[in-house]
Image 1 (cartoon, rainbow, N blue to C red):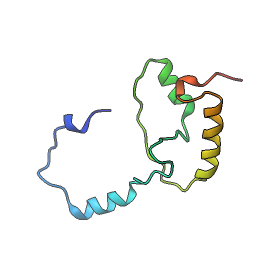
Image 2: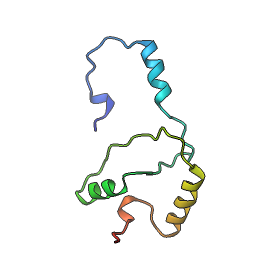
Image 3: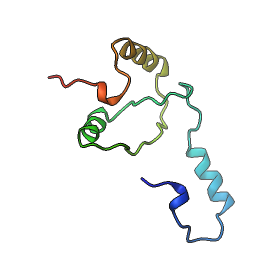
Image 4: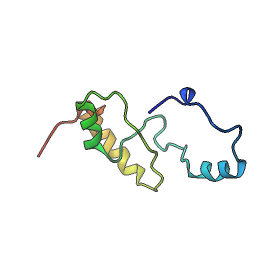
Length: 92
C-alpha cells in the first residue's frame, strides 16, 4: 500500500467516460456510518497482525449484504470486548 500523493502519474489526463464507469463500481456509501466492518478475511487479518503488519489492503464490498445482521454481530462483539483484530482469540 502506498499513499496516492507518493505515486507519480504517467499520463497527462484521464478519460471522463472511463472514469464514469469506474465510479459506478465504487461503493462509497457506508451503511454503517463511519465504522468499517471486516466481513471476510478475519484469519488473514489476524495473521497480518501476528506478523506485526500495521496496515492491510482493504476492498469495499460490492455485493448486497444483510447489514442489519452484521450490525447485530458487531454489537455482540463489542459487548464481548472485541474492538480490533488484535482482540480476537484463537479457537478450535
